[in-house]
Length: 339
Length: 292
Image (tube, rainbow over all chains, first blue to last red; front, side):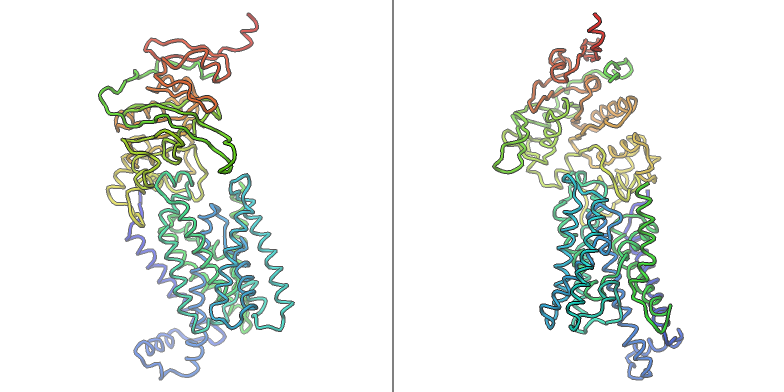
């Protein structure tokens, strides 16, 4: 028996954090203007000792004003999406659940766009609209997925796919009829894009929202393990199932909403990352949630670096990269499940 | 239904042992329940007043055909639902009023198997039985691990500890599920149709093991079943239900009357008393009746 210990939890997260650091260095180095690692370390050290005014202007612009904010945004978005995916998989008892596949990301996008149209100048309007959109969509998908009072896996996925397609059509409609407004581009909402940095005033709010969402879900990690082996059984083992479901439902919707309002609907991260983490470290949610947060950050930083460099100087939307990796995995998992 | 006649000497290993001297653990007194679609609509199913008592080391079988109210009675005992009238108490406390955590420390329930997603290893699964004793993240302590190992060993499945639940056979999985209930260290062990998907050998083995566990761990065991022959062999007490009414409560020797069982199970049956006071039930084929 290899029960989960605090030590194993700590070492696993530390190892993933190191991998993330390496990915960040790589992402800072690669791009239309390549930068050597030595220069990078040297200049980062200068910043660390408070000599940032001595940095060459082009370095400051490329590294600290263009690449670093984009990488940090990627870390936030990746962590949010991966934890939301792992949470939806437990909440809906479906290994194929993912905010994008279930249409929750599209719902959040519709909510954000409608909110932007209604009150374009209000500060928190985009994430709030996205949050309401995400909550409404997951509720709709949940009820569509029920057959004879039970949640049916195939019906749920089909309901999600139909919702996603319907909501995408609404996005097209809104973007076309309101073409003159400042609503950001279609690729942003449909595929996800990290090139627009977060407004300075929203950075801390987003970080706090992300930590609160992941933290709230983490308080239910032990309960989720039991929920996966059966809901009735979990109740008899002392789990307050209604409370756990409510916490996870609200928090996972919040995480999806934050990610979508910051970077649009990036797909498959919530599917790809938790499955990779399960394959590497097992399916205990007490480890899966923090490891997925770090894994999601790694995945998005790598995917965005690829999106920036693979056809440089032109950039691809980051969602194209995650879909290229995620869609085949989805099909593989679906086929394995059907067998 | 050929097993109705399967009452070999081998499975009649233990005499019914009335738990003389031990205190009453479970009291079900005039407990009733009604299911209704809405608060004001007429009930769709009612369980009439049911009464019985069970001591420690005692095994009670709740017996009856489908839709007789067996699961409702089990839910009342487990505290999942509160009785409309009467009382259901474990050691003098109403089971439905216990908080979730305390209830899980005192009552363990083994259900018919639910589908699992991302199945854990048998060891991880049994450790879940320690959930009601932990706090926050519930990372297992050394004593939790020792208790989980002990539970697996008691059921003879310690070697399966690192195997995934989905890789186990039906019988192995059943034992691991039972080990998780043991890890809860309950006073009352409830089982809902535990023999449903097992072959006859595994059914007998499971019930013998339950008898043994009741004896060794001083549990009170309540088993819901519709298997007459097995209940006759292993239960100290039988609660016979039919269409939501409690028809008879008592030792199998008193409850098993041919006319009563034939009426309840709507099958031609033969009941004869075995030498140890345990009744034997067998099916009388209808065609042989016609031939005579």
